[in-house]
Length: 250
Image 1 (tube, one colour):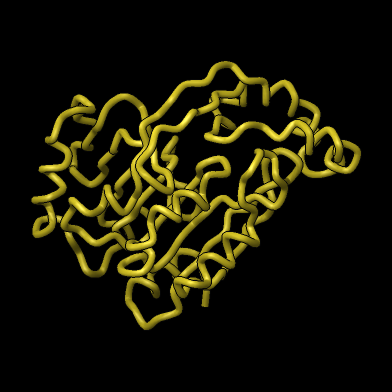
Image 2 (image 1 turned 45 degrees about the vertical axis):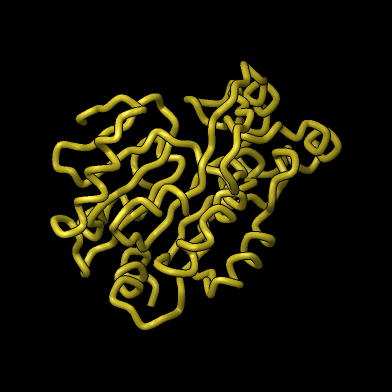
């Protein structure tokens, strides 16, 4: 990766001028929010379907890959431009940290049946992994504001943000209306964080933008609390057809 200082304008200049060189109508321009590690399945095995990947994760620097296909933006996203407190928890391999506080009260009140859900080791270790190590602030922007400076149109959005999916979507409404054709979201069915939105609320919200839930992956995580969920706009589009093919949806 070629790295740049987080205050540099080189990344933005590259993206503003890259449209004619990299845009391919037959491939998907992909946004990855919460971009720690590889893309989720099945995208990790279908990279040839992707033209360009735009990643958002605050890591202290912006980067562009050598082939200029993968761009990393050192930004945290939210529903509005603001400064938010971020909570870093013990987690497992750096996972679990969030803009939300852990919901200890809910877990304690429902511990008997929660302990019977999902992976037993994860259930047993939840209190240890949810220990707060430190908190600090992030300057947040919205996806709509970040995309407003770019020429390329992006088609697909993946979010894995430890409960903040709804707020990030709220800051993406122009994108959801205009160019987004599919989403892959990690959605919770159990409120492990305080004040988070659950799967049903997110589904209802996305219905207003014409998105249809087409696939729900098996429950995972602590207490089987979350499901990767896939949405598409049900329109006649080669990009939509390609998304369906990646997920093996007829």
